[in-house]
Image (cartoon, rainbow, N blue to C red):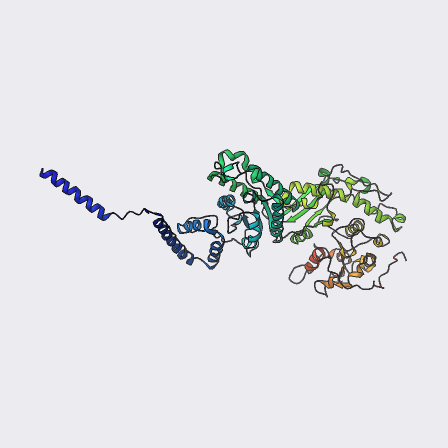
Length: 591
């Protein structure tokens, strides 16, 4: 009995001690207690987050301040908890490696969920940033785009708006997307559209699968019109929806997010800004292309070396001008590098142009024959009885076939922007015709016939006995730009000044010596140089073109870099003061 009593007393004592040592019940017993406990936890997190922010660099603190302003009441608390816990998330501050391109991801929670996978996949390849928000619908995008893009320069912007726009009227969606694309393109970044991922039919959540199909179709029209490439996430994920998409939800499982991130990273890697230099043989890509041995125009020489290689270049690292240079001379890599750096696309087509010296001298100098042959060589149309150059072998068709091939083989270069809707012709209002010597002459002759964006004439035009320079011009006269050295025989013989006067260029300024008058050379269309070429007239002829004969200064750099940029990019609408045509330029060179 005593033993039992002692046991009971000992048990009671232990229970009493246990109650004394255990904390009070932390579970709230009513709504007020629950709210107070939540507020206390949030205050503790806020305090820890604020203390963490104080340890950051000024740049990191500025980023956190942006997130505090933009993430909103749902995502900001999540972000704070993750930072306090030392966890990484999609909105991590990105310290740029200056040697790598900068990518901005814009999109909703689907995009947020794959951001970290994209970063992991592109580690060491690109700096991957994310807009400081869950970006929502296009209406929000129009209000917040400037904040999301910030002040930095972006090489690529990969973006999507769709799920939050599923109830936006299609006309409004199209209009807003168009505005967003145009604003992003104005930044100079390469813009990539991510098609919206599928959503299920869930009546309770007002999800309608067809709404995304319809909006992707509208988006495709906008992107095509603006030359924007598409990362087709809709097509990539659709076959895997059963295994990768959460049930009755627009979001994806962890493996699904990783799959999408890998798809985005692979697409971005293929489309990162770079210089693309491409070649193709005209005989292999131009339907009906043929040799013309009577013109000395063949696809391979006697040793089998290809003679019909065509060259192209585009540099997607720089803001694009949306213009295509067609260079009517042999390939000049030094020039092409500069054209690409200006944001221009450039091609050098191979076409039937080797007729020089094959025409009877009497006909050649009759004032019309050379111009007619040039036009036939350029168009492939019957303008001259002296030659027979089919369309497939003229410059127009060769250039068209080359651009079509480039659009297919190098979509990253956005060559399709220079093709009309059915790809039956180039959009000539986006084309700059250019060449040196005979190439500049054919460029000018063609521009008389076909309206183009600009004509750049190095050491030319020639055809000093022809009359075509004075014909009515499809291309406005203010779009012709010429550059010659004063020791060039074409200049000293009055060939070029005659052509410039006949083209009407005196209306746009005097002849300007670029070595004496600074940029922008009085906005004139007629530029000359007297740079030192050691009295060599042959070198003088080609010295105005980038390359081995061009003149360098004491620092080893070309002295005419600004001139070349001017010729290809100066506004055609900015013109110099009109002057009277020079009286010391002989117009009748038959005398």
